[in-house]
Structure formats: structure tokens, C-alpha cells
Amino acid sequence: MLERTLSIIKPDAVSKGHIGDILARFEKEGLQIVALRMLHLSKSEAEGFYTVHRERPFFNDLVEFMTSGRVVVLALEGQDAISRYRSIMGATDPAKADQGTLRKLYAANVQNNAVHGSDAPETAKTEIAYFFSELDITG
Ligand code: ATP
Ligand code: MG
Figure (cartoon, rainbow, N blue to C red):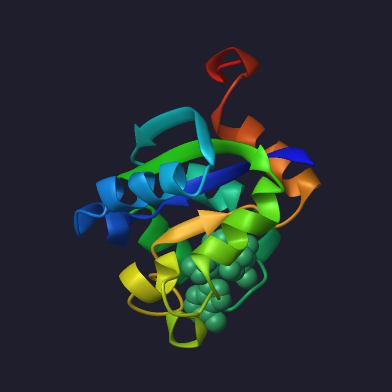
């Protein structure tokens, strides 16, 4: 199925200079970049994005991390883009991620884990709409 998913290159990967590596991987894997922007999230923007996790013990640390530097936010499109991108990212904890995944290659730990990816069609839709208007997404 042709799907769209939201990707974030998190502050750790941006500050370590991995934007280019990660974008190149998307192109190599046939995940088409249909929208892209760089931003430095405010506290309320990060809290809003991660609102599903607000009761989790790591929420405040996660918000602090996500606001610690610039991020790159992208909408990716392709066949089965949601699950395919999640397998390219690897497990949340890089110690458990498969060889060659973005998190194995670029993440430091379970919090500073380099990339975000939507986990289902409904979340992909709301997450893309959180950062992009329909006009921002190229046809
Ligand atoms: P993402 O939503 O960023 O793609 P994910 O779906 O693999 O990652 P979630 O369970 O949705 O993982 O957690 C969201 C984010 O919260 C993780 O990517 C990570 O940055 C952080 N996180 C998750 N679990 C922990 C934890 N146990 N300790 C610290 N941070 C965590
Ligand atoms: Mg998630």
C-alpha cells in the first residue's frame, strides 16, 4: 500500500552531522521525501508532539532532549512506508537494534536514539499534520 510516514532526525543526529547520511539512506531505500523542514522545537511543541507519552516517567527528559537542538522533520512516501521505515530505524533501544539500522549506526541510547518514525497509519496522519499543511506536501 502506498503510505506516508513522518520522520524526525532528532537533535543528537543533527548535532553529530548525520543529516546527510540519513537522507541518503531514505533515497537509497526508495522512501521518497515529499516534505522537509528544519526547526528548533519549543517546549510546548515537543510536549504536544509527544502527548501520548505524557504519563511516562521519561516524558520530561524526552521533551528536554527534543528541544535541545535543531531537528529535521520529513514526510516520506512509499510502498508500506510506515513499517518499512520502522525496520530501517531499528528498535527504540540501539543496543537491541539490528545491524545496519539507523539507530544501530547513529544512536547513543534509548532516549537519544537519532530518529523518530510514525507507528501506524492514524498516527502518521496526525503527526504529518502536526508539522505540515497539505500545501507543504509535494504531489
Ligand atoms: P519514536 O516514537 O521516537 O519513533 P519509538 O516508537 O521506537 O520511537 P516510543 O515508545 O514511541 O518509541 O518512545 C518515544 C521516544 O521516547 C523514543 O524514541 C525515545 O526517544 C524515548 N523513550 C522511549 N522509551 C524510553 C525509555 N525507557 N527511557 C528514555 N527514553 C525513552
Ligand atoms: Mg513511537
